[in-house]
Length: 80
Image 1 (cartoon, rainbow, N blue to C red):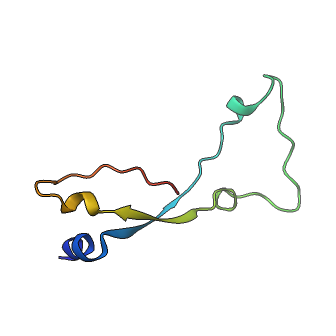
Image 2 (image 1 turned 90 degrees about the vertical axis):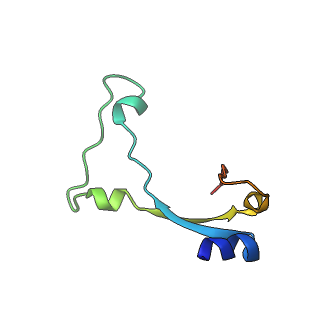
Image 3 (image 1 turned 30 degrees about the vertical axis):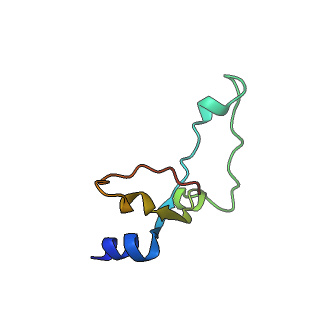
């Protein structure tokens, strides 16, 4: 029933999601094969949770194409 009210009344809905940007592979970004990474600072060890912080996003999903008779699917690209 919520989808029907979102389509008929609001003509869309908000989509909430979070994404974690993957850490880049060092072998792909290194300018030379012999390039070495600088040692981490001795005072504090970096943990994976500190490096990979999630990004919270929301996007408007337009549901007006579903108002046409016979429409049962919707393909849409949402820019975040």
